[in-house]
Length: 408
Image (cartoon, rainbow, N blue to C red; front, side, top):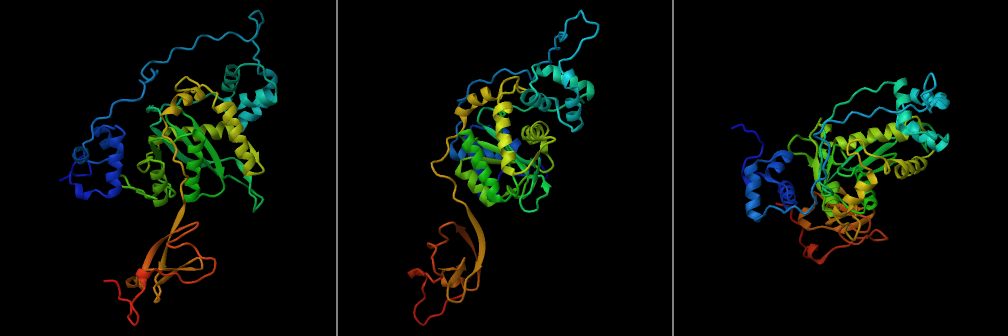
């Protein structure tokens, strides 16, 4: 019978990963209605798991929300004073001496914030940002944009995605190409970690997460991400399949994954806007000779401008909001995540498999079958040998004169 939710209240229909997802959200104090809305599971299923675990409603341990202006109409801006004495026939902008530079930057598509930052750092501009904003607005009127605003508790959520960086000379071809821009952003304080890389893989994706957690000094409780192959193997509206390595990384840091539905980028709008802000303000119209140079520029820009800016939505400084959110982040584990790769190997007739020139034993009844193997830096199933030779356990050896039996 069709229903509103896809999950019916039968426990044997849930996979282990789905059950652990519900348990993790319940332990973090999420309401059953919210879990059903975010994950798509039937509320009866969630309620049954909560009763089995005897999960009590979590008490609020976070400070009350800071009052925001989300439900209030914006106050009209007070009239600005002219930048020169009113006795003059025509008011002259403080940006007029820099008109040539500003027009050239506007033609590149750069916004008023980026132009103001360059004027201060490289041209000794003494005026205010509002003067630059008005001057640029006369050259290129801004188009109004309407968006929906979502707020989260401190330390509860982060959003992550890839974008495109600035043109950079590739070390192999010598041509200018755009590397991938990785951005992980805390939803409450708007603190972001940015780094560009040439190529991406699941391991690179995971290591960038670790760098972001280390820079923040903690890990969020949940993380929202798109259906990139580094994070999701099989995108699905209700039951996406996570990449096993990425799932293990999040489990190591006690972070719950909340993949977005396909074709729903508005669910992670904060990181989408952060990528656009970084591209238009920090990278627009720039070229770099090395990728290290671009990352150095991003670090300087983040410390000098992104962290000290007054956020347009919260009307507060990003650095101050991050200092308030930092105590609510989860403590980092004592050890870093140990990376591995999964490969398939066939068990030979002698009861061994070969990995990187070394041989490892397997139960005899697996002869002729393919087995998944987890390959780490120092070990597979036995310690890696310097010289290729066979290594067998006593339990895996067959009796003398007997042949291995095929797997039933």
